[in-house]
Length: 158
Image 1 (cartoon, rainbow, N blue to C red):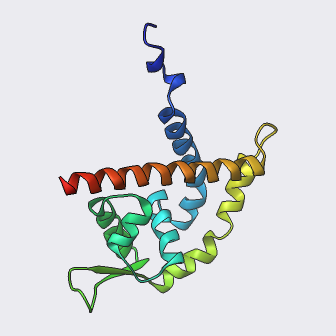
Image 2 (spheres, rainbow, N blue to C red; image 1 turned 120 degrees about the vertical axis):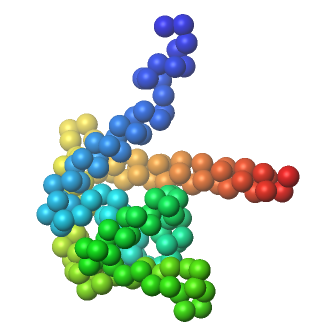
């Protein structure tokens, strides 16, 4: 091949993308037992950390657009997992709160991270290496997010 930089094996994006898809697939049997999807699980993790948070707050934590999060929240509300209410201090904001069912799911989901980690550990990949990988990916996400924030700020100043 003439352009080595275009080989799939030389890309950073592909192994991150493929690993994400494969890990999400590993979660699915556990989430099926709870009756939720992986994106719903992510929303729940945000709400378990911070109940009564705005839609924008959820979108920021998940690095998603609000127009992606809103339909997801609507489906979860229909399932009885959460409630969406207008803020009493700013009616433009929608606040998301867990229902009793949503809070109960936390107890049921508590074993999932350990089970998933156990399934990922192998002769060639230890728990310490998984933790290091997670931490390094957070560093990458923070770096890219900061770069994007600075670029957006520069564009707004022009």
